Length: 247
Ligand code: 13P
Image (cartoon, rainbow, N blue to C red; front, side, top):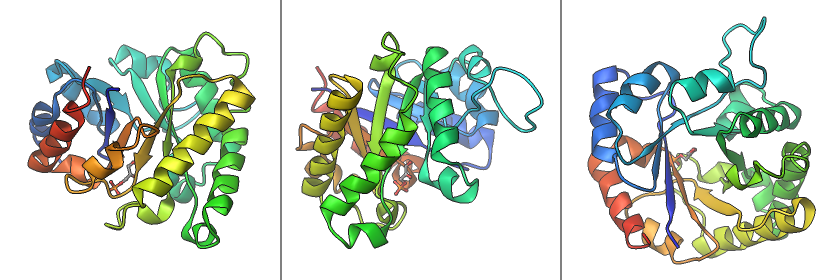
């Protein structure tokens, strides 16, 4: 099965010229590139094989919501994917599961593919994998509370398991544990939301060195890559590893 690579550039790079250069180097089939909002147009213009993604959006089309961006605005800018519920937004912007749930519904309704992020903090993981599953399960129940009636859009939902303690630390999760988490997420979504063939990605300190071991597991349908997607040579290696699974 082909593996999906989502490059989350976060608040990087500083200049548009750099963003365009990086996008050119990352432009491959099976890749989604998520630059900061002001670079979406310039990056979208040069992409031939990769798809364009956004890092966030608001749940309403229009109104008095200072600083926000709507699903339709993203669609018009050529965006096909949107990351929702990233732990950095939950942490720094205090996004709640209720807000995230609204975003998931709005994005799916607008025809965007959603990359919903869930994952537990280290305090939970120290209690074991069962505790991590309970934590992610609770997030999913809340974040996906509104999707059950969106049956025609549901195939556009992708979930990323991103344990908080693995993000930007250089300490990726043991792939066997991530695969167990992905399996749990797939099973739960199949029984609760009748979601079949759900793609579950792994995120957290993915590099060219550990990607092959992560991708060995069928349960893991791809990766959400932060830091390593900002280094063109490093990301090319990750793309090469993913291309072994191309169909
Ligand atoms: P890193 O790959 O830098 O650990 O970031 C992971 C992440 O948060 C991707 O969204």
